[in-house]
Image 1 (cartoon, one colour):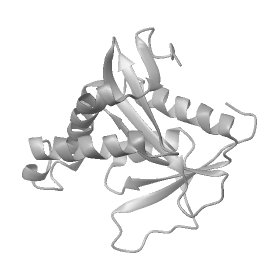
Image 2 (tube, rainbow, N blue to C red):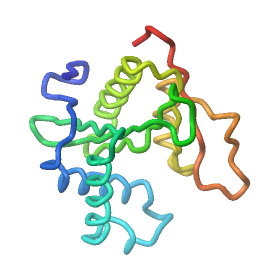
Image 3 (cartoon, rainbow, N blue to C red):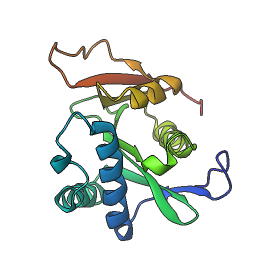
Image 4 (tube, rainbow, N blue to C red):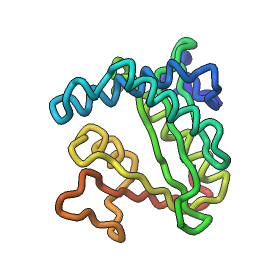
Length: 176
């Protein structure tokens, strides 16, 4: 799949095991950026953290039912998304478990291209509801999802000390 809305050099494709190191590094950079000041720096973009995320992405790539998409700009991975059937949910539900963009490419259309590719795949698969968890303090991500039609999931209201907010996207049949 190719997205030209953000430039002809942006491609969204299925991720491969050859992408693991790049995906782990970009995920670590993104996580370090939005957690900076909330977690100790020793827990952020370190070799151990990149190794942990590499293992996580390797598991996602090999997990039946999980789809992993990679956004490339000029041939280099700059974003990644993963989704899977909703845990303990109806077959029409899907969960966006990860969506990360390298901070150097924030607000460049990479996240929207990944999101659009996910939504298109969800429509094709017949999903009618998508859910995700977003870090409560990640205002940038919360604003991104709101712009794309996500709203708080009233069924999954956060407890007072929750660190994450549940969001819901209703997928209109036949729409893309």
